[in-house]
Image 1 (tube, rainbow, N blue to C red):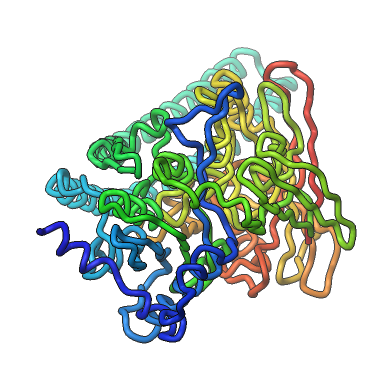
Image 2: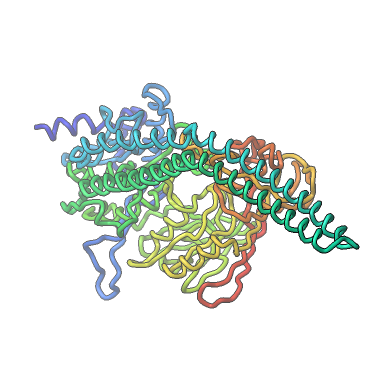
Length: 622
């Protein structure tokens, strides 16, 4: 009885989303069946292997024009009646048919909505979270306490006191040593004069007195320095203990957060249309379970449909609310399954669906995928899940060829141009707006590394040697072996890797070239903002050279010698640096633009295996 009541609350009539005329049409069933697909949710059936080929059957569920119409009805509801999300969020609708043949709509949102994971009439989270709810609350409270303590330790007054006294100590040592040097010069002059015609015994006595004076002055300086060191020792010990506590807290936070995440994902079990259920952690290699897996709209909708014996006809997900600054999510736009969290479990979720959902040969959806070439797009025209045609456009030219998923190039799967590839390394040209590695939040999971993991064979290794900001485009290096990763990281740490960036700055420079040395610190309370901080900051050094003047500002080449977060952006914008923010960088005061005008255009390093110097380049796309 409770199951039926729950379904009555969640399964909404079509009339709430599309016009009454459409719902009253005698051909509504036919409209649902023949509505043209615009995207396919697809994956391999884990329970089927085709005869002779060894390949698994490809399952798919369309996003159709009709389901998009239903989704737009939900958009109108969100705009007119529902509480709008304060932050952008993914929403989804699933068109289903129940056991009696009646059509209905399920709706869901990803993650939390204003702190809640449940709302009346919306599909709830996948069961399992309740098992660890108490542990989750305790862990979140503990993590917040640790964060507050970290901020407190970072801002201890003793740090400022130590910095002030050490600066005064260093200045006074320099002054005393300058006096000693001056007195030594005077003694040397006296020795030179006494050597001319003076009595030997007298000269010897004077020399002895000068040596004694020199020793006394040095001893006095050492004694004074020792007293100063003793005075500074308690302050240094206090800072050392604070730093040690911060390190312990950071490790404890990481361990506790990871433990909770493992418990949560071990408790989450998703079901499919074959009647099977598996824990989420079973779909991911160790250590690769992205944050927020199972909390997206598609898994929640399909899981509920499977457990309530509803037959899906179409699925659509869209972003609603403030768009993301990097343009990767725009309000009112439709999006497919996310690569890191949803795609690995999509085949299992669709398993057990019967025709026509997975064998509709008459449908030919146009699916857009990223092209590795500038100013080009790639369209996939799907005739069946097994055979496709690819059309790649460069200006007015178009090339058609037979296409299968296996023939798709690595560049097309990643959405990045591949600049270099061998058994040990992979170097790509990352577009602006795409993360280098998965971030912490659900909206920050799409990344180059995540896409590499998704397309990699079981047991394959990929790791990023360095990172680029999401808004920065350009050269990004990955390794395919642990030993190679360690060796190449050492080159970065030893600053033997040569890097060149190009940027468009908002103001002309006072000097055509120079060096910026400003220590950078990231305030935990204002992530991801970095700022110059002489007390807590880490050393950061950037060389620069003016390339040319342009109408928008000036084009500058940067050569970072360290790799701090946002280093070039802060060194450009800070008044103590160039005092000229990069165009398109609102975080640090840059004028608005269609993108951040910063590109990693060259890198040079020694190949860890072949020991050949690799020099790779990518021209700035602006």
